[in-house]
Every structure is written in C-alpha cells, then in structure tokens.
Image 1: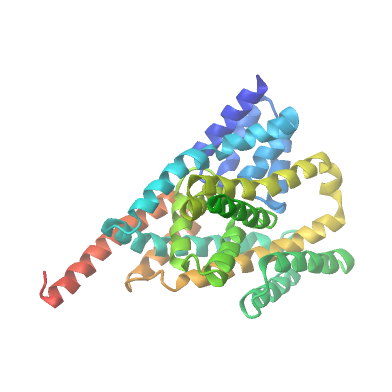
Image 2: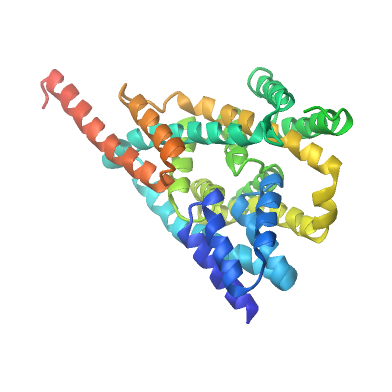
Length: 181
Length: 190
C-alpha cells in the first residue's frame, strides 16, 4: 500500500528532523529510494516550498503526497510529518506546563532564552543572504522594499498580513512592471 | 460550552495565521506576538520565547510544535490540536492547488515578481517578532555571551538547534546557581 509507505516515510522524516531545511536531505533520500520522484522534482519541491506560505516540511509533504498518491496522499504525508507534534510535543506541553515555574526550569530557561535569541539572529543573517539576492547579485530594490516593510512593522505597527500583501504588490510593480534589478 | 468556544476561537485565529506563514514559521511567531502579547496580553513575550525555544528543540515542524504548546496552554489538549489543525489547513490547501498548476505557476513572471516581493518581507517580520522578545531574555549580564555563542555556532558552524538549546540550558543552570549563591551570600541567608 503506497499510502502506508508514504505515512511511514514522512513519520520517519518528522521524527528525525528539526524543521526547515534540515528536512531536505531526508526527503530527498526517501523520495529517491522509493522511486516516487526524480532528483529534479525534489529540487522543484524545495523551490516551491520556499516561496509559498506554510512551513517547508509541510509543503514538501503535501507536494510529495499529491505527486505520489493524489489528495489522499497529501493528507497521509502531512499526518506523518505532524505526528511528532501530535504525540511527543503534546506530552512535552503537559510537562512544560506543570514544571515551568519550578526552580530548575526557571534556571534552564534563563539560558535557553538568550540561546534562542542568538539562534534567531543567525536565522536573520542567513535569510538576508538569500532573500536580498536576485540572480546572483545583491538586489537594492529588495533591500529598499525590506526597509519599507521594517518601518511599517516597527514604527506604524501595521499588521503582518497587510505587510505581506503590500510586499507582493511592490514586488509586482518593481520586479514585474519596471523590471528593476 | 465555554471551553469549546475557546477551542473554536483558537482554531480560527490559527487558521488566519496559517494563511500568512511566510518565512518558515517565524511570521506565525510574529503574529502571535502581535495578537497575544501586544493586543490581548494573555501571554508575556518571555513566555512566547519559551514556547518557541521548546518547539524548536523538539523533532518535527517547529511552528506546529509551537502551536501545540500554545494551544495546550490556552485550552488543553483539544486546544493544541485545534491550533495545529488551523495552522496547517491553509498551507495544505494552497499547496495542493499550486501542485496542480505547478508548471504554469513556476514559469509565470508575475507570480515570481510577487513572490520576490514577499521574500523581502520575511526578514523584517522576524526582526519585528524578536525585538519584543529581547527585553526580558537576558536575566544576568553573561546571558548576552550565550546569545553571541549560539549565534556564531548556528551561523558559522551549522550546529543543530537541539544542541544550541542544550548548551543554553546548561549555561542557564550554571549561571543561575552562581548568581543565586552570590545573592544568597550577600544577604547572609546562605
């Protein structure tokens, strides 16, 4: 049964990865070893998953599921990749809520909070290096739109959906109509 | 009855978040920061940072873990499932459509231009999410060193996020023990 195999594959992917791009090598090897996809299709998934809304892992699962077994395949693959959340994380939620005010947990969080801030700062830098580059060159237009977005978010407290829609429109105007670099 | 209303409300809130999940889940954290921390005051920015850290260090998709943790906190297990369900529904539907029109989508210049525009918003959104959390994240001065360390480990050595959280936890225990003893000694209670 392809559905059971699909579920099992994405269950493994879910439990052995920690989100985002770390899932790509696992997905690649699972897809190729089952002959569900070609290598070029896998790289297409990554491109699509990165530019559409939704977490990368979920997008890859949906795409791979539909390609191998239609809509039902997508549902099964997504359930597989979400299993760690629905099991392990649910248990963690129970424990976290029970112990979050304990002395040891407060101590642990004292260190985990700054470590998370450092990690996010790293994410910001690494994403900046890909998102503001178009066709291999630094795109001043992208940086300008990014600065407008930042000002709207921080200074005028514009909501995130509005900022995303505005950026799409600015992208259409700058990159589509005027073909700016 | 009230609990079911709360669960439904969570589902609808996360359904809306899910429509704008650009940037690998961080835009969800930013939207949670805006709604729950700044508008409704049902969560402090430190607590959101804690949920993010815990969600990040568990296997699977980071943002669905964060949603589960928040949902459980707000309305128990059912709340957690409602949040995860609401969050994942829009991306699955959108991507299913895209997969069908994949070739047309990929070669369309206008779609690419709009997506290039959206990509520019991802970093500002993450910055807006994290700026609110920086306050309160550094309990003792050396905590800044932890942030610098994890930043470098993540960026330059590609160290797995789980290890970064473990490093943070160990440093946190050591620092807290040190400062608690120091303060205890100064008070003469220790």
